[in-house]
Length: 170
Image (cartoon, rainbow, N blue to C red):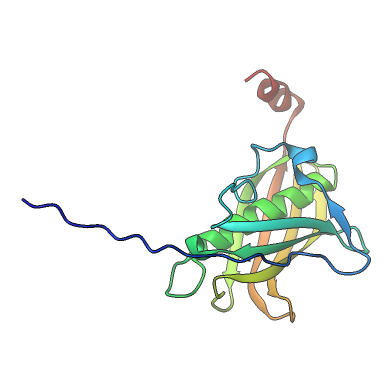
């Protein structure tokens, strides 16, 4: 058998503007949860996602995110799994930013419309309730004009003291 040539498409990605709105404050996610705990925003290549976190005027966590070419699912659009991964990280981080050390127990995502790749979007979050160990966070992935690509509801579970202690020992 002969060899088959493989051609890789090189995508040149320009700089993207992830600046927040006037009155927003930059939020340092790595300082809160560490460098390695950020599956999505820890991407070092910059071809998958680029992100910046902020707190808005009401202190809700907001993320500006660019979906790169490596997130493609349907031609020219972001894969639903990449959108769900973003909601998992951002909504979970919103709970951490509110002082709750959690893991995501359940994430429900409703996809509203296709999200074009190489687009900057915004994820708005709102902490809805805290009942015992349960923390409920809602969020939306929106175009900068406000149209909604996806909405998420995240049930987070607060880690126990024992779980936190055992995670520090590993």
